[in-house]
Length: 425
Image (tube, rainbow, N blue to C red):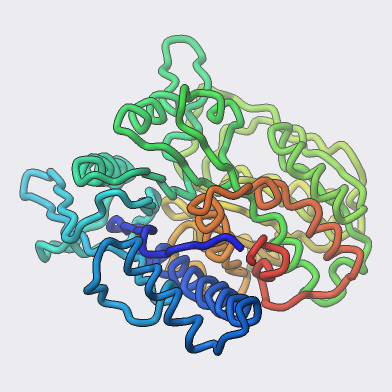
């Protein structure tokens, strides 16, 4: 039986990533309480002792491993608080400082940040500011540096939206900024990155030693589709919104055992899309049949939304009855929400499914938006990485998706991976 001491796991939440970090921590606490009780029961049964005595033995081991007879906890490994207090200061000139307020020497540290959080965040110094991607990125840099200076044994970044991921290939005199950001992380001493549906797989190969774990929200999205009455029993077709999303939508079509169609888009790259009303798409062609069908499209991220709205209008013109879109990283940049309000009133789509990987306040209130919680998935991955266990079954979730589809039932708990499918002991 493998022993685990949660006291060695530390989580730091940067301004912007705190909400998602708190949700993941809640699942980690639940998971380790569950694991702790299982461990207590196994020890009590194996050595024929009372559960209370097994609990005391585990607590003794925790105190020895922690090298402290004065541990604040008296009830073992299920009492870990995980979250480390950190003071973030925003100076008048825009500089940011991170001060870790308790010892993390020798700990396995996970630093959370949401680089696309555009809502005001509060600093320890009292300032309340809305931060840009670059501000959030600088916060990561100073926090990683602080963690390394404080003696962290291993540093993992939890950044669901990898910054600058759309700058992954150079055309002419351009930089490979996605790769460069990764090199900076690596030079600072980051060991792992956990992200969601990274825009290009090429980024994964940009590192020398750093390992990137690319998660997918496909299980949670398919589970959500099963909850929408009559949707999958309908005349249903999966449509790739462009050639770059073919593999992703082919996966959904294969898992759901539905036909696959494609929207081919010709673009004028001399134009830059600034909002949903302006798009650089010059022509759209549909390869496949959507007449009188329910259409499902999946993509990794949604920025201004102009391309998606244009694609949905084309599908409607070709006879699509109902359109559902799934977005792993729903940024809704600029005035995107108001443009989608207008498109919904126009009848261009039925629902948008997005995840809580990007913090949102306004769009989650919309009738047309479904918010899917993926924090438990991240909690499972963090738990396994911390225990040096395999995460392959969480990176490739086709097995549990096939099980879900074959059962055609929605498992408990909602929108989350059950414990017996997550590798929990």
